[in-house]
Length: 306
Image 1 (cartoon, rainbow, N blue to C red):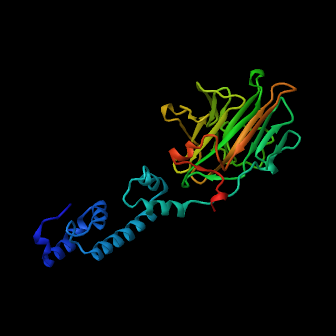
Image 2 (spheres, helix red, strand yellow):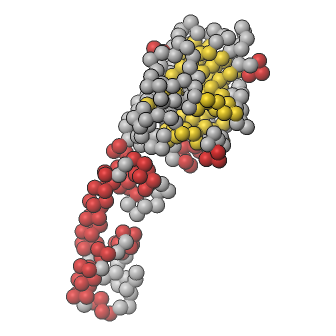
């Protein structure tokens, strides 16, 4: 709306009436635009516009605090809301600090696994059995945020039958039986993680599904967990894997809201002299940083931002 050249606006009574009756009925985007214009394009008093916006922000903040996490995330999607900064502030308020990432050394069987690189690199020392590890940082399903981390496959003789399954798993007190993330339920017997294996198998909700994707030594596997939607996405060398939920490229984690998952991997050396080693990157910089900047993911390890 522009009012340049409209002499009636020089009359204070008309301007006051518009302020009282019309300003509250305008869209927030229109009010914000008016606040950027000066006379003669806008005859509304600046203090009236400021009062109107202050009132709208107060009401909007109250509404945001009542929204469930999924509705809040949907509202902020795309970053085009006129009060986007208030949405970002509310998301930040709900966002739980996760801390520093590493593999949990207390769960590791030191006869079977060697940790190095500040407990980020995992190498098997005993072959012909499944060996599993879990990360320390927990991600609560139903929370706020899209969490991302990467795993570099350092060593893997996949041609000999060795395997590496990488993803997230429910929190366990023991991994002695080498659980493959997504295949065995958690302590509640209902919740499952999810993982993708080098031969293209995706493990989810207690079963495996074969996909037309595979990875090998030197590959980088990206794992993204949408806490609000309770989904996990896999990326191979910077490209999103299609499936196991069709073309969406995401898989629904099975488990109740409030269940926590952690980074996880299961390694298997097929021969006596087989080698299998992976390195987790929880904080970045990532091999494929565009996953962070383009799709709204944030690094699992947020210690550098606190």
